[in-house]
Image 1 (cartoon, rainbow over the protein chains, first blue to last red):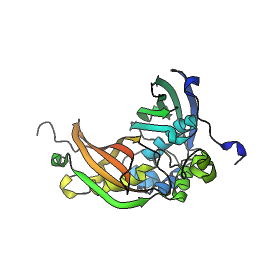
Image 2 (cartoon, rainbow over the protein chains, first blue to last red; image 1 turned 30 degrees about the vertical axis):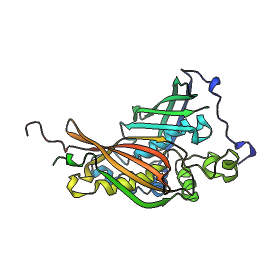
Image 3 (cartoon, helix red, strand yellow; image 1 turned 180 degrees about the horizontal axis):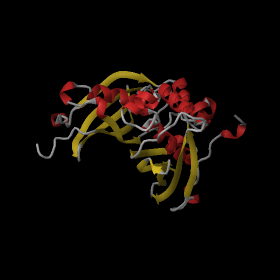
Image 4 (cartoon, chains in turn red, green; image 1 turned 180 degrees about the vertical axis):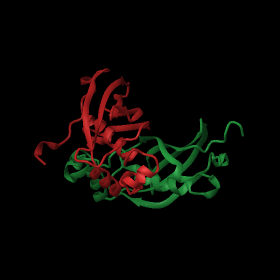
Length: 147
Length: 153
């Protein structure tokens, strides 16, 4: 890492309602899911084992919902600079992220919009996350403290 | 068979402390592809005023999930875990979760409701230090597919 990596938190006065963050593409391949299995301790077969995924009626292996939530959350933490500025983060898991076993995998495209500036100098950011033309998260929003 | 509504309001204490490891924080951040120095570089985290590495916002799910499994695996609840999917998840932070925090989890089944053929189990969990300091409150909705009593019944 260079010496330039120390993070910067945006000023509350420098952002406006309607400001867009991204879109940012987060590529997802099988290797990412295997790494997430190990890091999270969730080794459910549907996240890495194609025969099991298909046997239970899924089109293929799917990403952990929490992996998708974590990727979309990077839009909040990259905006915040210091991830501890994220005070609230919530999502609904609306569609699975299907990850084929090929050299490209899939992509989750995440866009944030600032929808509210609060008196306590926090901002509300609504997120959309799209993979394979489907909205994979609903009601996805975060609150970032810019005080 | 329907999920047992008698469990609404029950609280489960998961009192075996979970020690947040520095290398676990780094491993988790690497797994989600995030090179933010607050997750990886102790000196930069300290320069930003943090006592240790910051855990990513969704990291506490590792801890709350263990506690939840303990709570929902009671056979009297009638939940078939093979039919379960994760419906919703949220985190509300009182303070950042840091490496070297030692935490315990309190889990309450806040609601069990019916949505068409599915049932929704809403669980609220608090992650606190072993000294009782609240770090994060999480809400989790687990969907039990197809378990709702049929309308004819």
